[in-house]
Length: 252
Image 1 (cartoon, one colour):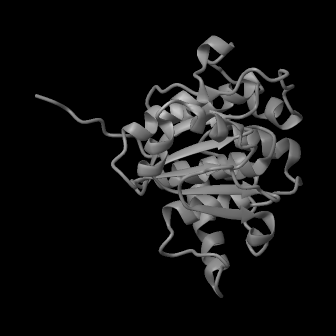
Image 2: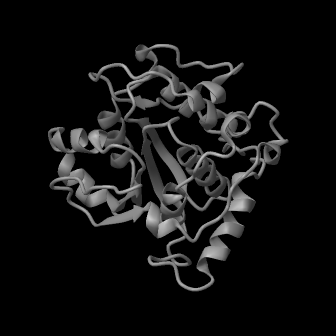
Image 3: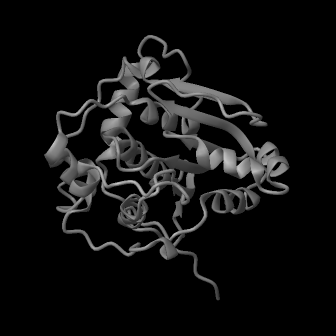
């Protein structure tokens, strides 16, 4: 399963936790992070996506960032995560158009083998559908769109099945990491964010969306008896796990 992840990245702890969980599953070869994009017109947001991508062993890849809005300020959470980090994405020219990035990622997938997770505004998804010829590609490639957040709204004319994952649906999840859980990387962005806002509310909707997308045979909505505890245990294992170095194929 190729997973496309789109968020107003850096505004909430849930987004950071969701991406770390997704990379934990990627590292176990249960899925592949196919594209990363932010609906926040903020270079720091794109830079944080790129930073986490590299920490978890991702190969060089463009980060999509929506532009054309009033340039968003960095949140205190985002600033904390980026404090003292070496960030490669420093201007808009270091980013890609998110709708083009998602369209290109989908064309590389076999039919029905992509999932799209959106944990923020759906502007990038709406722009994707407006690209010439993109809608049939979305319809063929995307198995499910997961819209996660406090109270997410559907995307007009979206051509594939959609699963709404609201904060209320994830209220039975209780997993909450601590900065000390990331001792394998002393400058882990999430550890720095948690040190600043460790008591911030986590709605966990994005985390639940990741589990549904990749482990859909184990977790369904509404969560059945015992599934919440199993989800908490899995999150605790995956989010804080040190990534295993990737073995790149060798050609002779």
